[in-house]
Image (cartoon, rainbow, N blue to C red; front, side, top):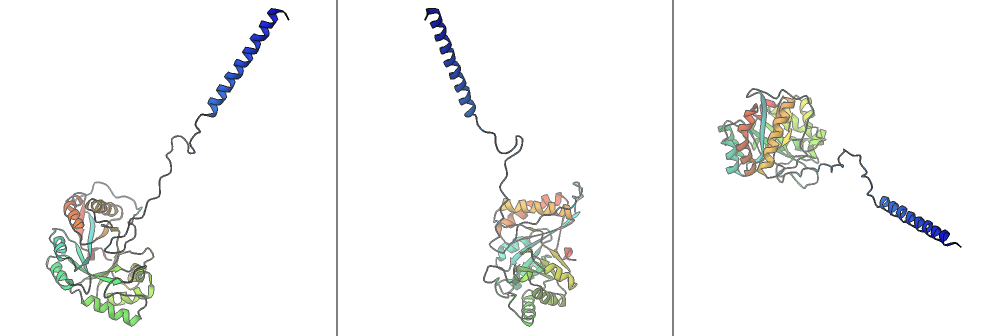
Length: 297
């Protein structure tokens, strides 16, 4: 083979091998490129579901209520939006409860029967010009009892009537009542019909604490021509001042959307501190504090 032809074949062989190497390198680079994300560019990844807020240790509670009504105008004159604050479970911690009584705003204390300071704190609240309610113990779901004076689904009609009357007698001056616990009893039409008959006979109003989304309390009250309303916001599912301030703001937002709001809290020092610090801001936003009786229709 002539030398020139040999050099030419060698050159072609080297060129062929080089082209193979380049092709292999490019293919490997493409294979190692990261894959595109499963979601489209410009969208965010799915967010975790909102977790349910735990119920307060003092009373059972469902998640915070929301509403989708048409918002009212943002610029509202002072005293336009009625908001009722109810403090449940009273009659047990008189020092904290009297702290609420000292606030220069209308609010309502809901007093438990058969606790040490039931009659005393009810009298103090009335003397301070605050509202007084009976916090009627009613059978809960998944717990043994709501306390002494409890209305249960196992009672006969006569027993429910008698116990409700006895509970009312424990809180002198009560103008209305709301359920303490009661996630089971409040969903029982027979029980609530018996309770409302007594409530009506005593000329009381009823506030449904809404401890169960299946509660029939408000509807049963309407059927019995008992003035009624329902809780819209729980203030202290956590004993935390900043959290309670956030819930007070939610009450304001709810009232702006719906014309009024009922918020329920408990005689906790953190709740007292939050309300003490925050009520002037609520007034500046147009809130007019009222007794719970004013919102019962």
